[in-house]
Length: 236
Image 1 (tube, rainbow, N blue to C red):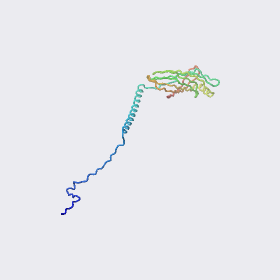
Image 2: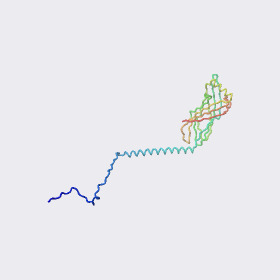
Image 3: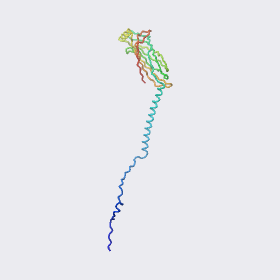
Image 4: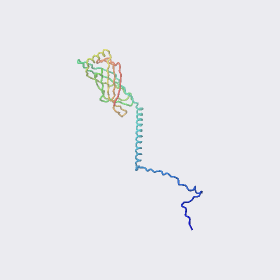
């Protein structure tokens, strides 16, 4: 009796077609592993924090300094002192036969300190000169002293000098003396230290140029100041 061979495949009936489906397609996402090892990321974060802290401290310091300056300015209310030539006296004005000129002047400069809580210390190495037509007639210096607040001080300055006074300058001076209008320039340079309370600030060089017109330069005769003009400057 012959036995029928078994089929190599299985026939599915119609009622089983929906039960067998291929597995859904799954996409494999590649995994990336960090290449940083150890504390590299932590060091970068620390550096960033340090930079931020430095910037914050710098901004705080700037605002603090501005605030302190505003408070000091509001409390002390600093004002610029004023200077003027209040008197000009001639002791000697001697023209020599060789056209050299020897002079002795006494100049009184009035310094007015209008500040309430600020003093000024006038130091050494000051320089004062009197010029006529860009020629130096005599020189001197300002005595060292401290001017307190709310104070007006008359500074007496003694000036002496001998200069070459050619015929051209002598002729121009004689014409000015006859007209009664002699132009002079008083140049002042003095180191000044500003003192606020007990605190002495940095020394500042103060420059004052005073253009004068006087009526005469006769010795032992009152000299009248007809006009004056002042320019000021300062440098560290």
